[in-house]
Length: 146
Image (cartoon, rainbow, N blue to C red; front, top):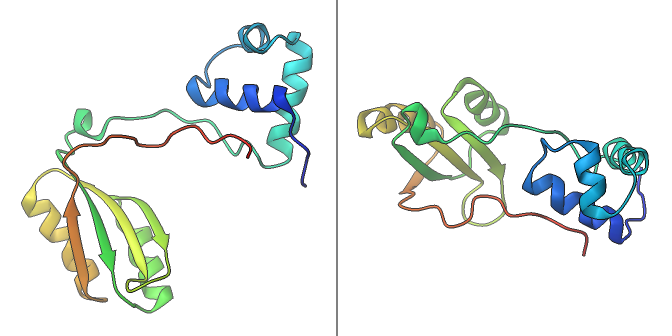
């Protein structure tokens, strides 16, 4: 279901991406709409698939995952690759992409030995190339209507 987004919707999306825990009353105050009006707009954005969910942002390092890496994986059988991704809890993001490599994976591991164990599963499927993330400058910025 495609909907037309207006300025209010854009402001609602910006506010919720900054803090999805705020009440409808606070959200309405920030975007200059009544709580029922803002709640209805949020419901419509959810129904249209614009808002797909709400989640907590967790710091991997605080959970003991000292290393995060991006792994490029060459051409591998699609079903085997998706099965391996699903079976590997350390994979925090996976994208099937165009270009020289077929996949880009984001992984979180506790140390280099853990990294080696995770990579071994993917090296059995295709050639890999790994880049350890040194510093995150922007994880996921707000996305607003064009």
